[in-house]
Picture 1 (cartoon, rainbow over the protein chains, first blue to last red):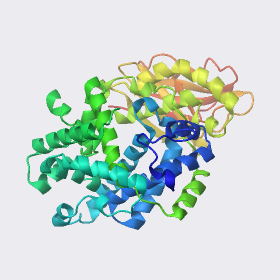
Picture 2 (picture 1 turned 30 degrees about the vertical axis):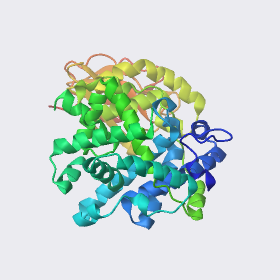
Picture 3 (picture 1 turned 180 degrees about the vertical axis):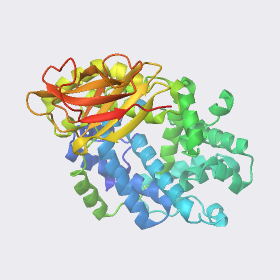
Length: 194
Length: 250
């Protein structure tokens, strides 16, 4: 599983993820197996950070990966990278699941939500992941406390900005602004361009 | 909400942190705001980096399960433009007819769902050409602000839906699962002008699912009927109707 995080500037032998996805869109199952190897680690990790429950996370990750196969013809490289596309899909699925579950069952306790540091403190140690994680962690430290909390609660916990505002007892407008300027600072620190 | 307010939602949007209604409102705003679109793109890519940072090793069985499952999952067909969306934002709240318009658009692209599913590619192409010509007018009726629909069961378990727009003064008939007419015969549609039948065109004899823009204006018609007629159609009905439907009323 060395390919697990072979994006963000690491030169890859053979077709890159974008090209592979184009092949997948034409029904190429071998190309899909390669896409799977590249994206399944981040997909599962992300889904698990939102859903927590391992069995449910695996189920949703599987749905997302099959969805990648099914909707590959929809992918447009002009709108962003393949990894970005896949992770956006995964995040949406995970958040939809957590929000629908919320409707019936009680959400994690407020204290538990605030208490826990972001999920990347708890996961396995792969070299590529560790490097990526170090960089993200370093950049998150450049954010103000409120920016960092808002961004991580929204992303890793799947909260709406209204829920974030309620949880942190901060006005709605402030949270909207912090989510934006927090991400902008993160973008600049990570050197993201799109 | 003001435009400036909307613009600050780029971050919340990129993090999928907007409730559904606000997300839809923001997406409408996005379609007219290039700067926001660019910012959303960058912030989404930034959010994806947060996702990458939590990657973990999936269990081996997951790989096997996924690779097995995809062999049974049909991929989406890439869309060739979406006529249903070109109407702009003015027609919100009419999702029923909007959805119908999308179905028709799909039928135009693929030559009818039933045919496409059977993968009779040649038929599909022929029908696509035919449907394309009617598509625009069809979509116009289906998405008219005053479009009204009524559905009913036809003989043999088929279903029919009629969509009438008084404003456009046109009607569309949508059939699904209709039996083919006997060989050498064709289904003819009639406007029911208070008991007098006025021809409204023929249905495609090859298709069991069809969408027909009725020929001519609705005017005073209160319903429609379908009869089986010799190929080419008749000047007036020569058999009892196989279906009679009243037009939807206000």
